[in-house]
Image (cartoon, rainbow, N blue to C red; front, side, top):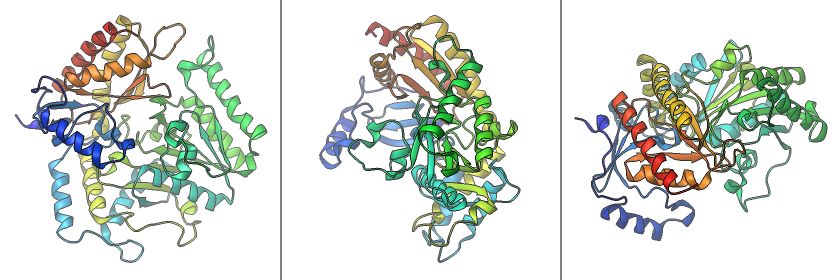
Length: 456
């Protein structure tokens, strides 16, 4: 059986094994402490499909997927060939000086697929999620001639100076200020934690009232260039934006000349059961003006994209966008092959299938274990929130940390999310087999039982 179809197995008895331990010690000596976390003592030797094989021969089922990068799995053979073929021609040109066709082909493909407003769209490329979000805001400011930006509680948009300011959890920005001015934060519709007793409709209105208050207490609406929203919050806790809230936000933007940016860095590229999550918005008549995407766009090669209608894009002055590596030919070659595979093999359907299996089991577990407060998501992007008490909803942070370690020792890689780190995110590669999914769910429940025995 190929590695891509293997089931997880720990051959060293405990993780890390001796070879991994030695390499991790070298890491700690050579690399800044900020990058030397102790949660995952794993050193990869090879990856295929959803499976990571470490230097000691342990095999892990990866439900983190590079934090949403590996929707197509590790080392997809067709992507490898595309990268090899391009690398034998040339590694690099700067697109601003020497044009290459691969860049144009991928831009044309995204212009057809991305569900932002406009009959004629244009796309350009950056290197990372933070870069594409920052570029989207530059585009919005150029088009509107305004300086204000509204972001939301729970948001994560990156670690550049601007995107650290946008990101809600200030642990990601500790000691890094000052940050840019004219950034304002409104409440994101976290329905599970809405005021007690509110119906969904009342909760949505509560969050909308909080947004409108920004115009009274923060910045006038006619000075706001854009609002930036994750259709399904990632780091903030895997929280889908309710469609009725999105429709209301879209109207607020339209009424006030504000551009709506959908940050699809993590939720794009087939993860939510659509090619892009903002397709759900478009179906409700609330398409965004600008869409950013990265992570799974190119199978792990550094690439991100910014797409908007032509009139918005063409308002940007020459020289203000672009960069040395933006749209690198090797990365773009990977992106073009990934798009071909996603469309040919219907990856949105794969996400829906995996999502149904996982969501169904998570709902069953919720009935059995009161520690599970909420289960939510779209397609194969699912969050499961753990609480110490179902009534108070106090976050079960310690339990969640123990759960991650219990699963690790059984060969399952999972990661937390949320401001209290009490949510487990599901981001498994969409090439995972049914047998692997079932095995992962089996380990997950075993790990819940083990972590419960360790206390809340």
